[in-house]
Image (cartoon, rainbow, N blue to C red; front, side, top):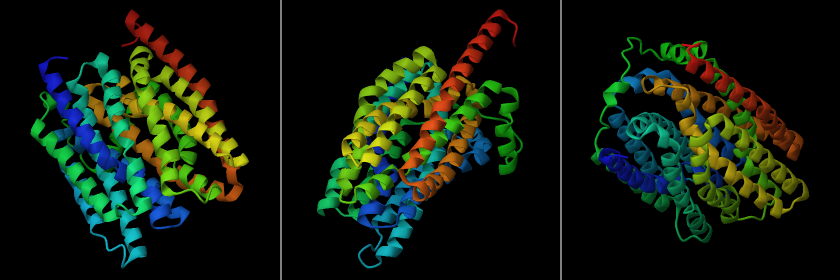
Length: 418
């Protein structure tokens, strides 16, 4: 990395540290807070995560907006809005109006996630032109590894909730300050040089026009179409259980505390992510996204087999084993969710590719979280088999796509494909 790259890296590292602590309260803990702090219903616990995916779906309608305007200003603006929403949660009258506060809490978290996904689109587009292409997997692994270390803070936070050491309002006040500080750091960093290269001179900014324009890439990029079809199946299978894991464990082992649930749902997977994310960063740079997905799909199959056995036998040891396997698998997703599209896109259309990827993630997240809960209430632990089957059938699909991409790459090199 040159001097400018290294300067950006340092600012990004400080931002990642501050942001990760706050993000625990936006994504990782809200579901457990609904279940154990508010003693809310399962459907609301699933809603707080599933409805957050609405924000990802919305991104594709504004991909032209995100491409045309200054990514740096948009990124900081949406980040500051997240901090404001966290401050609103900190002011909720929970003791006086507990049920009403619970519903407002869910609404604020959903709005937070909307802002998160808009800011993430702007960040990835900026991030891509700052660092050398050949190092993007390794650099993302560093940021993901640092973030994962900070996500372990979820343990003392949940322990504080459990023992009454810290209240919800205090936690979100502190979290909001961390969130605000992270984006102010980015503001000080200044805009990315060369950001004008990413501007799109489109005349149509109507949301429906942007939707059609974004998904039109599938007409010309069949490899990306096949990749996203496989991602849809793979992701849908995972989300059936991933968004319901805490609910299912809480239902089977009702005596577990919020800290116990945090260990299973957050701490153990995060610890394994820290260990394995650097392997995935090296592996993705070496073999590309598709081969990496083959290994990740196989490890997720193992994850959910262990989970099914643990629920069926009511044995926490199998649940812990599932969490360990999950951490290894999720580390792959932390890198490829942000970078997978970039192996198909160019810097000029990066936002469009990422917006499509984000929105399809949002569709499956919005639907499959609730579908997983519905199937769980209908057939119980056997819902795990749906996930295992769906993920398993993507493995030969990824293998076939990898062969197709290698064949097309060889043809391009020989000049047979433009």
